[in-house]
Amino acid sequence: MWSRIARSSVKDGAIKKQLRLISNRKLSNATGLTTTTLGNNLEMTTLKNRLRVVSDSSPGHFSALGAFVDAGSRYEDPQRPGLSHVMSRLAFKSTEKFSGEAMMDRLATLGGNYRPEALRESMIYQAGVFNKDVEQMLECIAQTIRYPKLTDEEVEWVLQSTAYEAESLQYNTDSLLSEKLHEVAYQDNTVGIPLSCPLERVNEIQKDEIVNFHNKFYQPQNIIIAMVGVPHEIALKYTLDNFGDWEVDPSKQFKPEVGKVNYTGGEIFIPHQKPLYSNQPELYHMQIAFETSGIHDDLYPVSVLAKLLGGGASFSSGGPGKGMFSRLNTQVLNRHHFVNSCISISHPYMGTGLLGVSISLVPQAAHVSSQIIAHELAKLLESDPAKGGLKENELSRAKNQLCSNLLTTKESKVATLDDLGRQVQYQGKVTSIDEMVDRVNAVSLTDLRNIAEQIFTGNVVTKGASSGIPSVVMQGDREAFGDVEFVLRHYGLGKYPGPPILEPRSFAVKESKGWFS
Image (cartoon, rainbow, N blue to C red; front, side, top):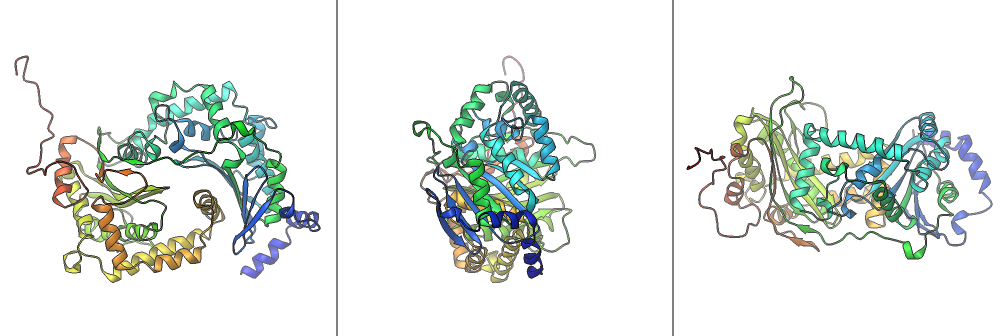
C-alpha cells in the first residue's frame, strides 16, 4: 500500500516541477539558513529572520500545512483579555493582496478545509489541500498573518459575532466549565487568563488594541511554518517566497515569555442554566482537578493515568477504543444510573497542567458528586488492589489504549501537522511516535502510584508557585453540592491550609425574615 502511495505521489505534476527547478541548487545551503534533521522524513530550517520551517515529507495524495504563532491568551494582559479570540476570528479576511470576498473564493477553490484557532499558548492557522495546491494555500496563510487590513467594518462584524459567542457560552457546558476551571486554578495569571473573550470585555476592545496585538506577536522569530506530505526543499522554497523578505526592526522585536505560573486552586460556582432545548436532560455539573507538571517527562504516566480513569457518557457504549473497561465506566457509569457522564480531564501546558474528573448528573444526586469523584481518586492512592489500588491488567489496558490513540493520529495528515508544529513550538524538537510508544510502555505501576500521590495530595513540584489546593467548578444550586472541601479533606485529597474541618458546613442561602431578623 505504501509503495503505491509513494509512486503516485512522485508522479504529482506540481511537485515534480518544483523538484526540477531546485534540483541544481540546495536552498537549505543558502546564506543565512540552518537546516537540522529531526528524524525520519523530518527536517527543520531556520531562516535568517529566525522563522522556522519544519516538514514531514511522508508521501501521500494530500498535504497539510499551517502556521504556529507564539501567542495566545496566556500572554495577554489579565485585565484586558480576549484579543487572541478576536484575532482568530479576523483570520482570512481582507489583506493587501485579497479582498475579503476574493480570499473566501480562493479558500473555497482550494477545498475549504482550513481552520484558524486561538489556544492558550498558540495561534494556529492550518489547512489540508491537494499536493498541487500547497503553494496557493500557503500564500493565503502568509497574507492573513503578515498583511491583514483589519478594516473597521471587519472588526465591527467580528466583535458582534464574538459577543454572540460569549452569550452562547452559557449553553456550551464543556467549554464553560473548562474556562471556569482554568480561571479558578490560575487566578488572573498565565493559563488562567480567559481564552474565550468575556462578554463584558467585547465592547471595550478597540481596533488599536488588535493592531498592537498583531504587531507585537506576529513577528518571524515567533512563527513556525509546518508542512506534512511536502518534500523539505519544496516547503523551504514556498516559505522563502512568502516569508523570506520579512524583517522586523531589532528595537521592536518581541519574544513572549512563559512567565511564572501561580497555581491557586479554590472553588467557583456557576448558577444553574436550564437546557436550551426541551429534549435535553436537566443536569448539574462538577469538575475537580489538581495541578500537574504539564509538558514534562511526567506527561507519560499522567496520560496513562488519565486513560486508566477514562470514562464517558451514559449513551457511549460499544465500539473499540472507547475505554469501556476504564475505571470511571465500570465503577461510576455502570453503577449509578443517575450519572449522565463521568470522564477524566487533562490539560497539559508549559510548566503546569491540570488532571481531574468531570461529572454530570441529575440535580437530585448533586450531593454525592464530590463523593463519587473523591472516592475514585482516593483509590488510586491505595497500594492494595483489594482496596481499589492499581492493578497490572488495567495498567496494560490503559497503555494499549493510549498507544492506539497515538498511532491513530498518524493516519491523519492534519493531526500529524498539529502534533509536529506544537512539538517544535513547545520543545524545539520532535519526539518520534516510536519513542512515545516506548515511553508509554515503560510506565510501571510504581510510576503510576508515585505520580498519583504527587498530584492528588497537592505535592507536585513546578518552577512556579503552587498552593496544592484542588480546583473545583460547580454548576447548579450551590446548596445541593454540599461541603466539597470537607469531602476532599476526608479522602486525603489536596493540600489545604488551616485547621481540619470537623463537620460539613451548610451552604444554604439564609432567607430574610424581615427588617429585624
